[in-house]
Amino acid sequence: MIYWDIFVAFFIANLLGYGGGPSTIPLIQNEVVNHYGWMTLQEFGDLFAIANVLPGPIATKMGGYIGYQVGGSLGAIVALAATILPSAIAVIILFKFVTLFKNSPQVSLMTKAVQPVIAILLGVLAYQFFSSSFITIGILHLLIVALIGYLLMYKLKIHPALVIVCGLFYGGIFLS
Image (tube, helix red, strand yellow):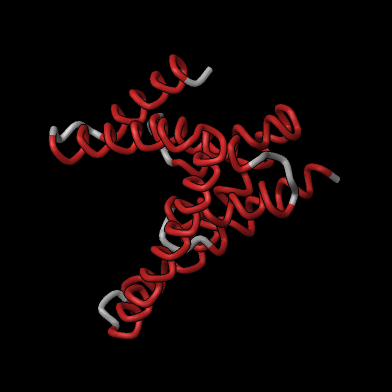
């Protein structure tokens, strides 16, 4: 039964996650944290940070890890299959229609209409991570990490992956 739950959680999140990784993360978080309770929000946030640093699609990295934690090796395989299947099915079925509708104004409007929804989902996720961090590490460390992250990314133009690694080191040194 656990493998069916893993499959459903990742299949639904990736089926409804129009737009790739950023739009699927809040949906995966809802399934994994809120619906099934396989992880806490803090654990999910840590996994999200680590998955962002590693190369490759974020949804597959998170799916593989969560699937492994919940159901072992077979759970990882099931989660990865459920993550990849919606896109694979869509590509196979819709491939012949791509050339027909690629310049359609309706398709263009639909794509533009989805973008604010994705932004709101990511904003809610960011707020949840912020409030969880505020409770867990306190306002002082939260402000230090936010300020250093801002300075590194926007003033010194350092790549966000390196800023995340710096945040991991900061947490390992001062918060463990």
